[in-house]
Amino acid sequence: MAFIILCPNKCGSTSLCNLLNKVDGFECKHERNMSGLPYIQDYDLLKDRIKNFTKNYGEVGFYYLYYLPEMLSAIPNLKVVVLKRDYGSWLKSFTFFTGGDFNILGEIAESYPPYHKKKTEHEMWRFYHEYYIRVDALKKLTKRIGVFDMDCLNSVKGLDKIYKHIGVPKNKRIYNFIHDNATAY
Image 1: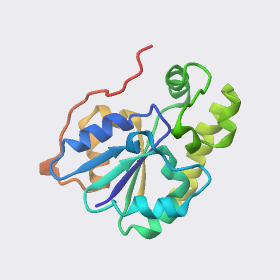
Image 2: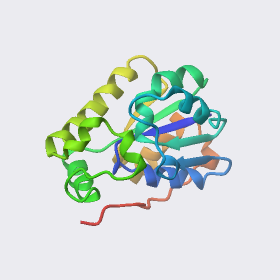
Image 3: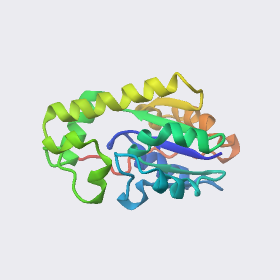
């Protein structure tokens, strides 16, 4: 089953992707080495990207949310995992990650909504809340989207929920509780 992992940065996607790469027969790419998709939709680029989505293959990329309706239509049985971290914890981690000012540099900057360039806490608040509002709206349209609290990554029960949603067989599931890319304050 093809899958996609969505969440704003600093919500556990690196840990989940690395864990899925340890599952026999599964492959997960994390933000394609920071070459995202532009916030203003580029459907030709998307078509090129989704050719890779085959059985037991998935990617992490917060930017895929903006393309999700097209992806759900084009990729039969695509499963979507959305990781969610509470806003206060996310803000602290994301602020640290971006140097305190929503400072996103390089090619990946084009994947963020244009208002991120104002670099204020209000813009971070807006980015986080608009992201999950969009997730909630799309979730009402399909059962292929599952929203999981970031804490699911820290327990067998939580990981089993994610594994079941993606379609990882019980005999292939791995339970390592490693916090890859964790923010050290």
